Length: 386
Ligand SMILES: [Fe+2]
Ligand SMILES: [Fe+2]
Image 1: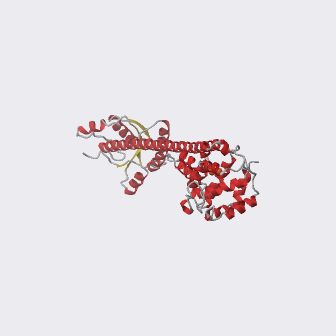
Image 2: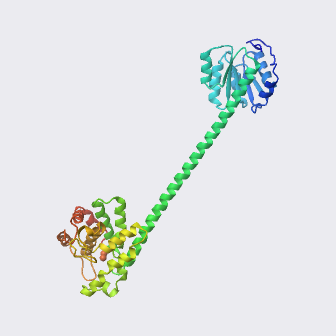
Image 3: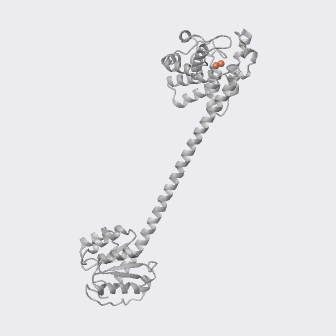
C-alpha cells in the first residue's frame, strides 16, 4: 500500500484489504468524539472524512485557539493534532488539554520524524505519534488503540477510586468500632467499679454508716501498690478489689458487729470468721478482680510474724495484696472513730504503725507507706468522716 498523504497533498485511497474496516469499525469506541486539529484545511477534511466513514463523530479546528474553544464547548474523547501550526504548537496544545481534561486521549500527527519530539509528546501523555505521510489504516489503528487505552485508563481510575472509597469506608467503620469498643469498655469498667463500691458499702453500712472506711482503705491500697512498683493494671485491681475486704461481715451477727465495747474472746472468734466468709463469697469466680478481692478478704488480718488470723501465715506466705491491705486497714482503724472508741491522734497512730514494722507489718510495705505519707495524710483528710 502506498503512502496516501503527504503534508499538503489531498488524495485518499482506501486500503484494499476488506476485513480491516469491519474490524476497526466494530470497536466499542466507535461512537467516540474526535477533535481533528490541523492548520491545513484539506488534511483536516481528509482526516475527518476518514474517521467519520469509520463511524466516529468529528469536530475540526485550524489551530490551538480554535481547538481550545471546541474542547470547552463540547466533550471530546480524543484529540488528533498536528504538530506545526501557526501560534501554539501541537505539543503545547497536548500539554494544556491533558492537564485540563484528564480523560482526553491525545494523538500527535506530524511531518517531523523526530525522536525527541515523539518522546516529548509521549511524556506529556500522548497515546500515539503518527508521522506524515501516513496510511489511513495507521490513523485508524492509532485512534482505536488510543481510545481503547483511554477506556481502560478510565475504567482503572474508576476502579481505583472505588477501591479508595471502600478503604475509606472500611477505615471509618473500623474507627467507629474501636471507639464504640472503648466506650463500652470504659462503661463496663465504670459500672463494674460502681457495683463493687455499692456492694461493699452495703456490707460496710452495718458497722460504718458513712462507708468512708472502704473508700480510704481502697485509696491507701492503690497508693501502696503503686509505691511498691505494681504495674497500673495490678494497682487498679488492688485498689478496686480492696473495697471488698470486709464483705464477710455480712455473715457476722449485729450484736457482735455493732457491740459498743471490746469483744470477749468468744465474740472475737466469731468476728474473725469474716475473713473466711469473705473468701467464700468472692473466691472461685471467673473474674480476676474477684480473685484479688478474695485474697485480700482472706489475708488482710494476717501478720508477718505469724500472729494474725485466720491462718497465722507469716512473711511472704502472706500474699502481696494482703500485706498491703493489713497496713491500710490498721492505719484507717487507728485514725478514725469506732463504735467503742474514738480516733487516735495522727502522731500516735503513726508511732504504732512504726512499732509494727517487721512484726505486724511487712517491712518493705511499711517503708512504702511512710515514703508516701504525705499522700496518705491527704487521703485521710479528704475522706474524713467529719
Ligand atoms: Fe477486716
Ligand atoms: Fe476493714
